[in-house]
Every structure is written in structure tokens, then in C-alpha cells.
Image (cartoon, rainbow, N blue to C red; front, side, top):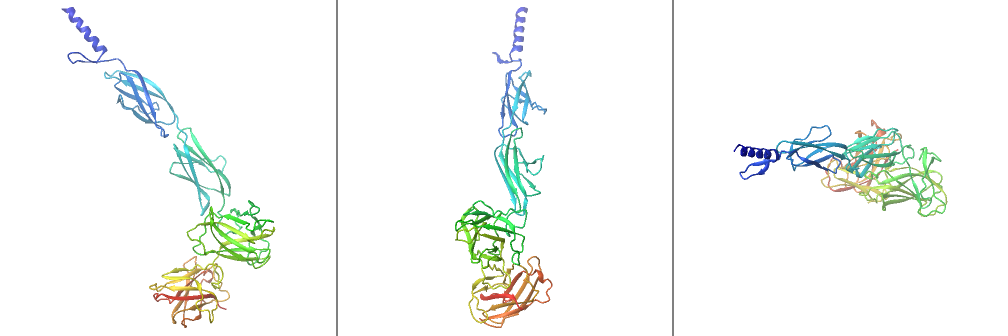
Length: 515
């Protein structure tokens, strides 16, 4: 009997040592107490250069795992078999420790190597921009797939330290001098892989109106076409300084022998022209002959089929004169930024040289006759509307063709009127009296003439009263004793001042200093 009992005890002990998890007939569960074996792990590396790695361990006989990430950080919490754990790594090689535990608490450990190499950034796009107001400053923006950060080298200094910025940010730099510089942008992956982009930029003051040929930091690139293509206009000393043009440096264009009748020169301005204040452009021209047609043209950038042009004719030979080109036919919604000049237009070149200078927006000067091709850009306020019109009554003291028409709309403010900016302040050295020819549908109305300084709030005004109905008369305004006569460059006129508008039409002409 004792022998039989001893045999049962030995059999039970063997079962307890070898297997825990098998069931016998009476429901008892037997558990295997041996250590987990065949320990391994799969690594799922996120392909966005974030360094995120998901670790999925496996082992025979394992119930749970603990992961030592191999980078000096704290091991993971214990998690059950079939699950995984994520961790962020820098690029590099790591020895991952995997501890497997069975249900009885027995553990075994294995190691597996993780090699993490980041992808190089892809689809790198760089935008380099400049503002006209800060021509020496550049701003760099970059985007790229898999980029963790960017570095930019601006190329002005030796042994330059790069400027770093993150995706969604920008880097700016202001150059100390004009020149051509190579900007290099490096997209960083977060590891050793990089992608680079380079672009040469030319730093100079923008070419905008007025074009004077006097600013050393401006590249005055006027290119030939229709003959001598690709040649740039030479900058030379003024051949004959005078009152019209006393500047030192001018542009010289030689129309090549046998060139096309439409040969000329063009330049791309760094920005469109603001034609809201005037639609006229003036150019100082020195021609070898009088009677030479000069065509001035403005084109939309990249679209030569969209343009506005005006032709003038030289009147003197071998001396400077100012030609004014009326571009009032322009489309105000179009951005015109390509400037084109044709000298002796429609005639083949004979190798003759023309000089030009001071391309600028043209504003009217006293006397305001409204007859020349300059654009008279009246600015209206309070319900008044002014424009250039035919003289409605060519008789008496005014037989000119063109005048200004001012309509004081019904219901317009009592202070409704119009003003115009002059090219330069009024010169009161010889006279302080201004005269204006007026035509009114009724007499005894107040006409207020106001002179203003466009650069400050200073203004002065004088009024007069009409005495005629539907007839031209001359009114005079005495500005003697004004405090700051040297800065007055805005002329403002109010018809039937201090009375609301009734829809009446008034005419104005020949605003001038009276001797």
C-alpha cells in the first residue's frame, strides 16, 4: 500500500514540474514552468522621419513582455503577448532588450538590433521673395516631404553659419551690398540624409519709376530688339546738360544700321506702375533730328499682346526736350510692368544715337490749360465729378478746345469739389495771384480755390464770386501773405461752395499765375 501511494506522489510531482495548462479528468489545470523560448521581435518603422518605431515581440510560451529600448530611456511597462509598444528614436543603431515572461513568472531575455535610417527629404520646393520697399532683404520659405527642419546659407559671408528654421516658418536676411549671391537651402531629415537646393539671386535696388540712371545700386537693363538683340543700353555722361535735363548720367541707344523699322529697347520694371494719380509718362529725349517719331509703350509682364502706347514727335535737334505720353487708354485692371521705347519709329535704323533720361510719371504744371497730352487726373470728393471735355462755349475770353467739366451732382455735399496734384510746387516768386476762367449756369455763386501741401496738412484758401451766367469770365485769387508758399502743390476747386449740389455743370480753364 505504501509503495502504491509513493508512485502516485511521484507522478503528481512530475506533472507539476513539467506541465501546467493541461486538464485531467477531474478538471485540474497543469502549467508548463519552462522559460519562454524563440524570443524575437518585429519592428514597424514609421516612414515619415519621425523616428517612431512600433515593437511587436514574440516568443514560445510567453504570456507578457517588457522592452528595453536600448537608448538609455526607461523600459516599457509590461504588456501581454500579441500587443506592441511604440518609441521615438533618433537615427542610429540600437540593441533592443526583450524580456518574455510566462504565466508562472519564469522569464527569459533576448536582444535584437534595430537600425534606424531616415529617408532623405523629397519634393523640396523653395520660394525666395523680396519686397520693393526693402530691396536688399530676402525671405526664404521651404517645404519638403520628410523634412524635420531647414538650413539656409545666404552666400554673402565666408564660413557662414546657416540660419535654421522649421517647416511652416521662414528665414530672412538683409544683404550689405549689391551683387549676385548663391542661396543654398538644405532640407534636414532628422538624421544624416539631406536634400539641397541652390539659386542665384541678384541684389540691387528695384528698377521702378522714375528711371534716372543716377542710382548706383539699380541695374538699368534696357535691352535691344529688332537689331542688336541682347545688347544693353549704355550709360554715358550727359552730352549737353541744360535746364531741361541737368543730370549727370543718361541712357544712350544707337539704332543699328539696317535694323527693323520697329527696332527699339525694353526693360522690365520690378513692379507695375501706379496710374491712379496720373496716366501720363514723361521722358527727357535728346534726338539727332527734329521730327523723329518716338513711341512709348507699356506692356503687361509676360503678355506683349496686352499693352497701351502713345506716340510723340521730337521738335528740336541736338538738345534736350521733354516728351509727354498720354496713356489714358490703359486698362486700369492691368498691371503694366514692361517698358518699351521706339526711337524714329517705323523707319529703319541708320546707326544714329538717341539719348533718353528721367522716365517718370508726368503731372501737370501751371498753367493748367488742359490742352496738352498730359493726363489731368482730377480727384473728386463730396459728390463732385470732374473730367476733361470740349469747350461748350468757344467765345469771348476762352477760345481753347479743351476745358475741365465739373458736375456738382444733385444732393452733393456743400463742400463737394475736385483737386489735382501738380508736378512741383507753385512758384510764387513773380506773382501771388492765381486766375481761373470759369463758366457757370448762374451768377453770384462762390468759387473757392484752395492750395495744399501734399506732404503735410498745411493749406490756404481764397474765394471769389461769379458775375456772369453761361459765359466765360476770369476770377482772380490773391494768395499774398501765405505762410509756406514753397510747398503748395495741390490745387483744389469748389464750385458753388457752401451750397448743396443741384446737378449743375460748371467749366474751368486756364488756372495760372497772373502777372
